[in-house]
Length: 466
Image (cartoon, rainbow, N blue to C red; front, side, top):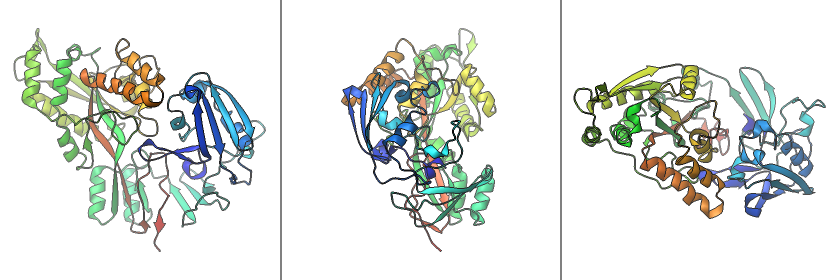
C-alpha cells in the first residue's frame, strides 16, 4: 500500500539495479562516506506542498541517525546533512555505507511524506506522499485510491484502485473466481500455493510465476546435535535430499532447486552453482566412513543417528510436506528423522533458543539481500531477536562477513564470494529451493508482470479491459 502513495529517492529495479525516482542523479565520494543527491524538480505532494531540498531534509532527519533505525547502515553511520540549494543535498556518514543506494530504496522508513501531514506534536495525521495514487478512504477491510492528478510521472490508465484485506487464502481464490477481485498473489502479500496456481490455470485464469528472490534453506544446529559437528554428516544429509522432487511434488514445478544461498535474481549473489543431485549411495558412504554404521538406523558409540527437524506450516507454507519427503529420504540412508511441527510463535522461539537439530529458514529477499540475510542470519555479533541464526562461526565466518561489509566498489563481489565459498566448503547450510512468487489475475487485466520486490504494488503497465 505504501508503494502507491509514497516514493523513495531511488527505486530497486530488476536484478538489483538502482533506478531514479525522487532523486534523478547521485554521486558517492570519499569511499562511500559522502553522497551527493540531485532531486527531481516539478514534484508536489498530494496536498500541493512542493518537494524540494527542505522537504527532503525534513523527511530524512525523521529517521536518519536514530537508534530505532540503526539496523540500516545509512542511519547507523549518519553524521550530517547539508542543503546545497533547492534541489541538491549532501549526506555525510561516519563510515562507508555498504549498499547505500539499495538501502535508500527500501519501503520503510525511506519513503517521503508531506511535512503538512504531521501535526505540531510530531505525530502522523494522514497519508500524503508524492506517488501516483492518493488515498480517499480506508478501514480494516479495504483502502480505496484515486489518481494524484498532479503526479510528476505517468499515471495508470485506470482511475480507481481498491486494495481489499482478505486474510484467508481460500476466500481470496473464491473471490477471484467470483469476479470480486482482479488480482491476487505474491510471496508475502496474498500468497497462492502452487496447487492453487495450477487449479486457477486450469480454470482459465492467467497465472504468472516469478522465480522469486527468497531461498528456502535448511539449517544445521551442531550445538544441539553432536553428529552435525562433522561436515561429512552435514554433507550426507544435504546430498540425501532430492531437491528436484521437492520442486516437482510440492511446488508443481514452479520452484527451482537451489545450489546457492541466493538466486541470480539478486545482486552480488555470487558464482551460481548447480543444486546438489540426490545420491543416496554417496550419502551412505559418507556416513559409513564417519563411523555411523548399522541398519535400519545407523549408530555410533551406541547412540542412534536421530535428528529432529522443527517445522511450522504457519511460518513456512508447505514445510510439513517437505519435511515428510526429507524424512523418507533420510530413512533410506539410515538417519532417523523426527519431525516436530509447531505454530508460528513457537517456531520463532525455538529458532532463537536453538531448540532444533534441523530447521527451515527463509532468506529476506529483495531489496534487503544479499547483505540483509548475511548479516541478520549469519553474523554472530548482530542481534537478531526474530528469526534466530541460520549459521554462525565467530572465528571463521565473522571475519569474512565483516570484510564483505567493509568492501566497496569492485571489491564487493570477490569478498562476498568468500562468504559463499566458506558456506559451501563447510556444508554449513543446505539451500533447498528458490521459492516462487505466484500471481493470478482475471481476463480483465492485461500487461501484468510480477513486481521486482514483494513491497512494490504491481499496478504499473497494467491495462483494464471493459
